[in-house]
Amino acid sequence: MLAHYQVYAYAGSAAITRNPLGAGACFTVGPWGSDELHRALFRKLLAEVGLETHELPEGVRRSRLRGRGWLLNFGPETVVTAWGELPGYGVKRLDS
Image 1 (cartoon, rainbow, N blue to C red):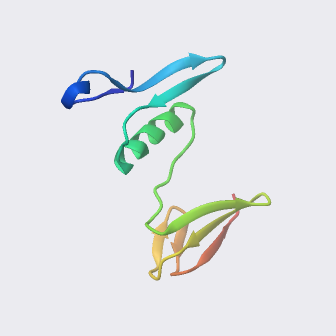
Image 2 (cartoon, rainbow, N blue to C red):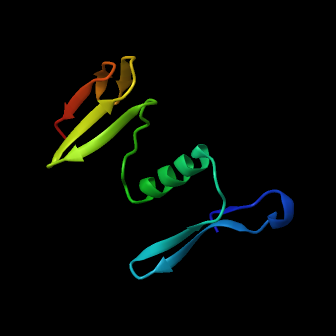
């Protein structure tokens, strides 16, 4: 059990579980969780397999097309990312 309910009738019961499945695992996420819950869960799971995570500013998306990475800013303001500044409504090609 990775997390349990804290209130109401389910208090103490499993909310997020991990079960072995072949060479991997199957996860069950019971609650309709907050963005913070999902971010924390995925950050933990990705770290366990050695993948780095980056928080993106509101309105910024990272994409991959034909083997190239891209940052897209759908907002009007310039933002700072792990890959440098990205102007409002801007697009940046990522070399890696």
